[in-house]
Image (cartoon, rainbow, N blue to C red; front, side, top):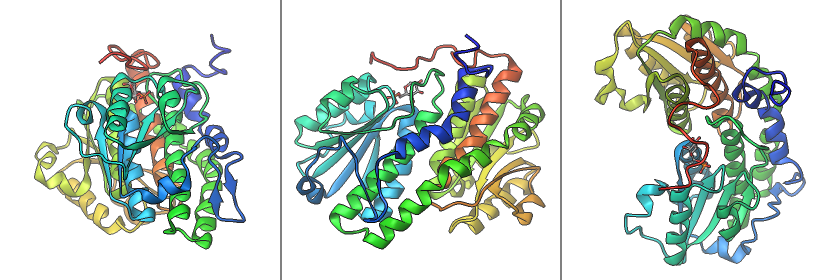
Length: 369
Ligand code: G6P
């Protein structure tokens, strides 16, 4: 079994460390660097269908839903099409507004999640075309979809999703380039620049994984907290949700993710010297705003674990702990930010002695409603 785990103690840790390779595989053979475009071999939706799209609904469950929330930022920013993101079990029972100009994007690692499959059928029955972002080739969702973008993460064994998630983010980025190039919101130069940023990600991820030992000591310091709060803004807000979900799933510590600017409308009441607050504050357009949210937490005695850009002295001077990630393109920062949060959840769980790869009550794929 140790061999299957490639020398790692758990599948989850192995899969976290496989992420640079997984992303390289998701990108492989798909970049048309000269043209500033991408080739998605099984998308199989004619350009005419993509040009018709007036609205996009992204539908998923769990971690895949968090990827969808990031996808909304990418698609709205670069394709200027309104995007809604729905939880599959909500969408399917809601009399959703869908027509033949609606594109439905299903995201599912397993391709077998019952609610996501049912939501796909519901959307199709209402005339929407769909594209599935799946990891498992020939899964039910992949087979029934009009088009598929495979993530190529390789088999994911740990119940808590890691490499499948980051490759979903890459697949959404690739699809954004494809759609933007097709409808004309992304020109050749911009497409080339987006691709140039993407090819740097595996190496930046390798660098980010060097945080492992530091995160382990952070885990020791905070593992006895009863609750954690995770804050982020904009495209990184879904990463706060995902960080909180990871911790909950495998360490059984209650954790909540929140948009940093919304903290004052509720969670701020919980902040005291027993509350670790993980704040995602890389140097991007929202930086000043998040930094001031961080000050609000510190002023109330909260213990800040800041995930920030390398070399940020400002943040390092104020937070209790800083975890520094390499500076990256804003659209791809969610990928790098995910890594310290995965590692934090992992190490806290190991220290608590839980069953990391098979947490209680959870299933890798939920094939019943
Ligand atoms: C289960 C898994 C999660 C996963 C979710 C959606 O709850 O434990 O890790 O995110 O299902 O799964 P899918 O295969 O559709 O991405």
